[in-house]
Length: 480
Image 1 (tube, rainbow, N blue to C red):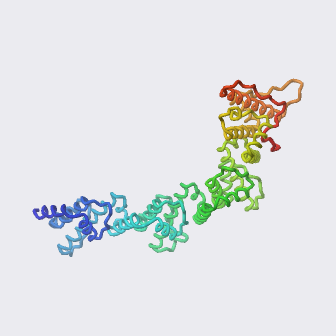
Image 2: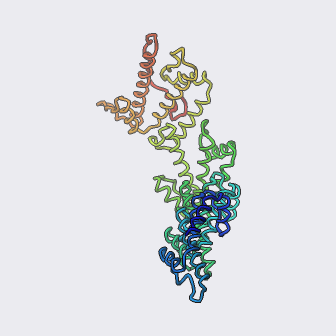
Image 3: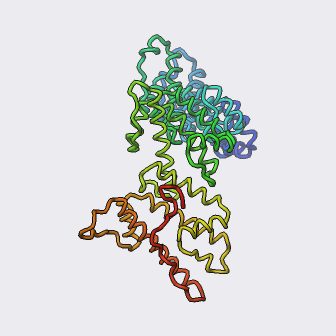
């Protein structure tokens, strides 16, 4: 006992590098964050085990549920028996230590294999660069992704390292937990045990990447075919490298109006939808249209290529409608793709005009005087911004269906009902729409004049005269 006390005191005085050298000498990887206290405790424990008599050593093993008889054979010498029991105690100690650190060492069940896993973790954490991990990732047949972070690659590397070291029973448990079939049928029917395990590891790897791609909105599990998904990811990666000019050219080729403020990021996101839809196939494209309540044009049932093109076009246009709605073009309320295209196209034309040309078009349309024009302190940019805003508002009104126009009137406190005058012909829907648009324009002029008068030190000269018939900005003829 006195010798143990002296040894314990000596251990406490040992430098960390000496303790680490002793630990590595046992065949364990030196973990960078292992503290001196942990190493001292382990070394003291080993010395205690060495000092215990055989029967106490056996009792120590049983306290940790270590099968003493299985650990040793009956014909072992006392020293061999002691060594084997100490090895079992050390193995149990390290497995529990690593389990607490998240290495799943109990599932591995073998101290040396678990130690190898820990060493692999240390290697990836402290020695492998992102470039090294990308090279490994590509080497196992996965597509290079420029946006993938080092942390994601390192996590996948560790996961594969664990799976490869698990016994086959634990691998099948992981597969079952993820809904992956472990049946030895089809291509797997004649595989040996090691080949069978490798096939299951491939399934686990594919499942994990499909899960991650799903979180990025790539619909990988929905597509279902990993080869198609990999091809899609590669295509999307290529699209992300295209210059702005090439993306703009592609967008114009779709017959869509060119938008001045459309950024490269938006164009890339839009273009990346194409390879995903191509991976869907016709049936899944139909399902996607049904899910989004998109109604594509009718095509011949036996022409699969044409069906795919029509379905993809419908989804593309649906996406643009959603984008234009977010930009304030009221696309969902208008509900007609061609009409919204007219508004966006005409709106961009107005934005490209010089200030003088825009002012002329604006005044010719009898729209209200802008506050910037009445306020000498306001700049030209402020007046231009207000003119374009009013033009956009009126163009939207002129494309809204009757029911939406009535809602617009109600929101603005403008009468929305049109009475039929006895003795006159019944008004058509276009007549009613024209009347409501006229009321909304009058309201816009009144509101703008009222605000301008309230902001000006000078009395207002009165409301602008209301013309007998509005020309209308953005009318169905496309002229202001």
